[in-house]
Image (cartoon, rainbow, N blue to C red):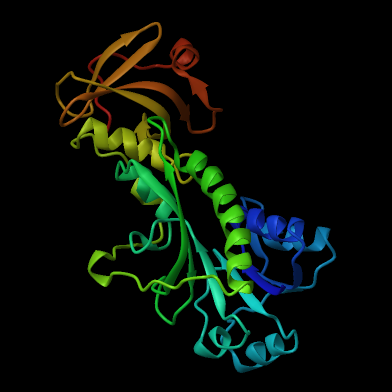
Length: 308
């Protein structure tokens, strides 16, 4: 098929590469404009742009895809279908109806659950046992189009946002290739979503990672895993940010935030219900360490209280 591909992050780039490998003709890659990144503010390109340039594919980076001149630009490519993966902009009706087979979207959840941004992190944070990928024909609303195909993925007990991201990106890429074949052969089915079961999740902001030790230890541990590697779960130690990367839940109780045990290889923090035994952490300005390495140089004592 002749494809216009719209996507931005690494998750989208995996599908981009898989489509090329399957022999599809990506005639245009549409991605977000270059943006400053990091402390130096150096301009960075998206993963999809990087992939497109490596294959000699034209790149288009509109600030607002719905502007009339941008819609007219897309018409020049006479694509059979538009494939959208984490593009970051809402498509207007004119684009949705432009190609022969319409526009399809690769979404990292089992729709209608988790419409919107960050479905991967929320699946881990909420303790879901199963996640997956949905390929849908796009409608004008937010992730509300008819479902074409789905693939389920079971979450492991130590699943992180990062590990699930990697697994679903590969799953979605393969499913997209299979779905395009069904569409081209006229074998695809289109099932409306059950609106009564729809849930929405928003963009995750860094502040979500601030740990409230008044909460349940099991929920905090899921937050730690769900926000790894970004934006990370954190507290403060002597005024410095302390990121917690890995922890285990213990059935111990004391004042929330209180450090109730320190040994050579153990740091236990009480929560509102239960406690956390921290395994990996990172103090501001330092590298990520396991607990044994951290404790060799840390100024921390049993009875200290971490802020909630």
